[in-house]
Length: 286
Ligand SMILES: [Zn+2]
Image (cartoon, rainbow, N blue to C red; front, side, top):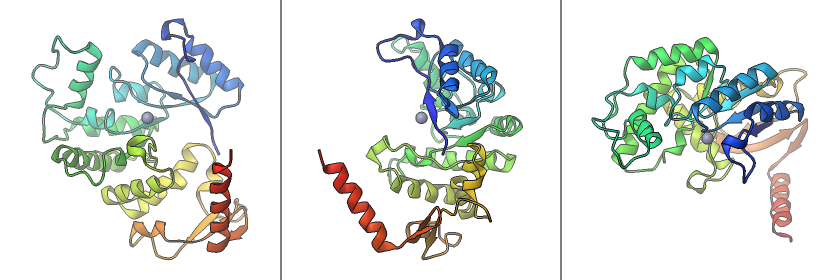
């Protein structure tokens, strides 16, 4: 298990009254494994990354609209969350003609320019390979969270973005960028656990079932610094699931969980249902 702390000012405090370097130091002292950076202004963002490097704590998270993907990777960001507003935006071409509409804030205009929201279909440019090489050189991993774009959407712009994300992800993968499986459960009210299967299906379609599995197991374990949990080996923690079908043939077989072994103890379907019901009852009790 690895735990991180979100680097934003405490509620009620503005960014200008907050010391990002001090917040990183406190997270390190408190024993967190990493800090999560979100969407501050450029100066605060790079201050957070510098402080993380100084204190020897990993930084992961977003790439704000005003920061380049390559700048973030070169400044030590260990993991980039999401593709849509960062990697994909950096990989598509043709900025809109006039993003600086006076009715928009500069921040919003920069985002739209980067996102290329006005120009469909999206076109992956050769820049994408340059960004992929930069990420690979810095060992900056990516959690694409493909499923934040609804897999069942019939909106042609969403479908176009999905295709572009799959194309960009292939370029990252072939450049040697480590890809991780993760989801945002608050998006579209998706359920933790269930939503990971959805993400695995999208990763398998973009790359391969094997790479999707690796993204959720060995890659995640290596990047978070707990390699023992990501593979099955003698002396390991003996936690794994047994499936009723081969996920390398069809990734949806990861949903067909037949047995669970948790730290050497086997839970069959009956035992698991008992646990789930017990958890549900505990959650409902006042
Ligand atoms: Zn996020």
